Image (cartoon, rainbow, N blue to C red; front, side, top):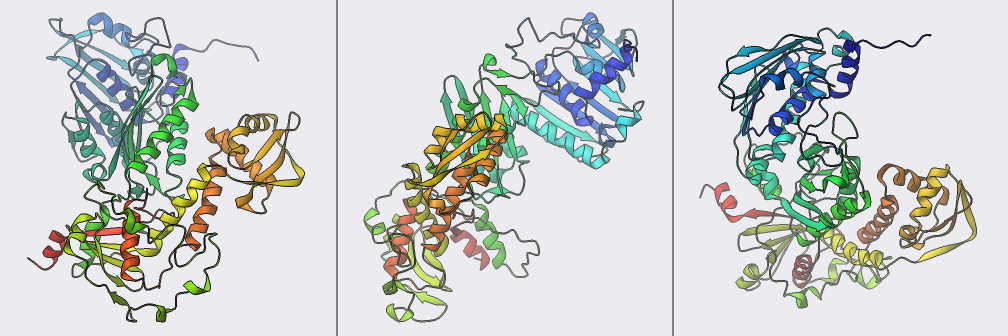
Length: 610
């Protein structure tokens, strides 16, 4: 078959396939152009999910007559000099407008600030019309009509109007988060109107992500080797069932980067179940020479020159923020608990759990002497090796001076006890599992098993951090792998060795396993190494082995903790509360469930109409 030169129309349609995937892609490109033009207000109007109409109006710098003529030609841009490694704008490829014009009716009306009048140009499915005078006070208005109308093969792959409308909303949300100083409006006959006035970053996060997120967010701020990370990350107990509420920005550009998502997964792996996802808004500032934004015409993917540095910065800063949060937990539980007390309350679709709340930061961890009575590794239900409980500590109710039944009364502690400690003073035990504590603000309900499980687990994690013992195999296990997988594992040998797994490359396509982590007991070395190889290929780290070890530690902590159904003495309850106050991450158990919830006194009074 002879080679022929494609027509300009076909070339433009092929290029459009890369840049314009759906109506949301058009909105993204045009809004980014408006931002690059210095607009302080951007108005977006859509119809039929953007298929019938997309109109973007801005008050930016506008374009001259000559600019308009060049804007609809491919690879014409005002945003790029001669260095693809020095990109400081959102757009730079010069493909968006001609690509859109090749698959839709495109009309551009613009007036530059120094021009006496406006100019307009239209493109009808790759047919460019001459520039004509127009009427506009300032800025630019771009209309896109009948998207993909003459490319039915592309149009039939679009989703419903509602789905495309939601995709546009999500796209604008992500851009608006990155630029809180710009006023955005979003309207049209296919949606309810949205209006996000200009303000501070906190204002914009409150508008888009919600006030609840800010109430349950940790501040993240870190810098390493010229790379700066700032933003907010939700508490582990403030989580969602999908990752749609994870917002990443690199130099102001919204991205959906697999490396960043993998780093977040690793940072929260110790606190969340597999099917739960944290909520976060993170801004990464990287020198332009250290990041490649030219990976794909859609510009949603980026590549870092030093991906390990970025991952380490993200994981380290998130873990530090979680550690600094102490025993803090989500504020969703207080409102949920108050609602549950109201007459007629029912929750047919109740979530798996309702996290706890927190109001006062822990500033006085002085009651360490109280916590000493309840050490994490010596609960009444476990020996120091976290095995079976000693006979002397079996839950015999006769060994306690508490009345039998579902609630155990606790002798009053002095009033200052409830004021001095963030988690208050124990007042009762409910259903042999829940500790009722009085605080200065109201009351706290603590799940005794979940709380002590986290305390024991944190003690075990210290052992993980200090290095793990390994068990030597009598005969090394040889695992055959593709050469690239074997090379990745060999590079990660030092990291794996710190986790108790000793491996070495055995020829170009095999790995020899000489030692495995003693904590795992008898392990399928073949399956373990293959899983790690997949982990390294997908995420660039061997987080899977650490997850497995931490899962074993969590299981040990679960079996070595105070059991539900055991009556505790007053000093044991208070000691558990004091230990929670000085234990990192005690706001949630090892499975991501909250360990305590709080009900404010004002909420209690409201329940009784006071």
